[in-house]
Amino acid sequence: MKYLLTLCLLFSFSKPVSADDFAWQKLIELTDETSGIGARPAGSDKEKETAVWIKKQWQLLGYTVNGFPFEFSLKGQKLTSENLSITIKGQSDKILVIGAHYDSTGEKQGSLGTTDNGSGVAAILDLANRLKAQKLAVTVRLVAFGAEEFGLQGSKAYVGQQQESLKHVVGMINLDTIIGGDKLYVHSAHETPYKCKAVSKPNYNSSTKLRDELLSISKDLFAENSHQLHPAFQGYPQGQTGSWSDHALFACNGIPIAYLEATNFAIDGHSGNDGYSQTTHKDAWNCLKQDGLTACDRDTEKKWGMIWHTEFDRLDKLTVMFKDRLKLQLTQNIDVLEAFIRQPNNYL
Image 1 (tube, rainbow, N blue to C red):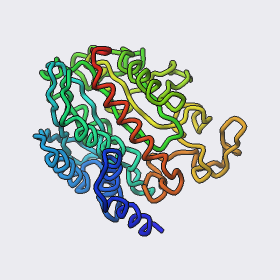
Image 2 (tube, rainbow, N blue to C red):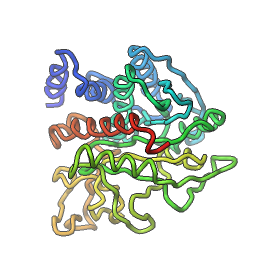
Image 3 (cartoon, rainbow, N blue to C red):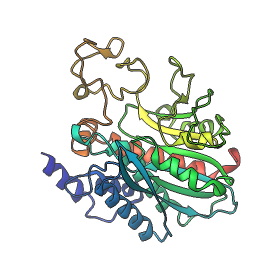
Image 4 (cartoon, rainbow, N blue to C red):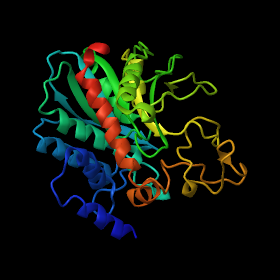
């Protein structure tokens, strides 16, 4: 079944690739283990192969790619990774950073990192394709972070290496797991400062202006299917997120952030309505009780509606479960980002 699905997916791209298909094709090339790269653990040869692949994709679009290697330690072992970036010059020297990590985790459980975070990588590649012929008011920097899954190593290294250029950064949008979940969300940094231990002189910023503008654009474009703010839950006011992804280092450096994510905060998961349960699809549960959207038996439930880091985070299973939803979500996220970039006066 897996190989038949792969052949069908690849056959669909034997014709010229349209703008709407570009990101989807890159997602296949990156995360399908038969025709592409597959799992990409931080510091592994597969992660290095992915870095080479991302460079090539941007170079084929005519961009100069900057690489920033770094070292990190994992379980006493020294490993290497690399951050990659391109800059799309606008009329202003003010910089909007849009970033996504390209490593993955959960390979022992069968994950190939399709949603987490092949989706984010596909989005920044498609943005590069869409923006290359446009006149932009603001300078856009697209960043692919390495080694996020083990302590945000890539973004830690990036902000440490780029302190001078960060002075010109007016905002950072983090793309992490932007497809797969039942609903699309946009978050801002938590109003309570993160523990910014990796930053020598933290200057925390919890502004909601990027989040609110992205939300407004999404509502204009997609109405009832737009991105939304998660409801308040224990420890987290409405629409605010924690420090578990690459946006955190930018917030700690005084930069407004927004974070796009696909999940489902309506689910009463293993730890409550915290967004770690992403879907109500029956395959992702041993037994889901529709009344209250929780496990039929909280003591025996094993799956908990989770996609990331599990056997479900791979195209051969996701496309069977969700059909066209993944592609539609991917396109929607990119459409919103492109519209956001093209009207910067509302957030600069």
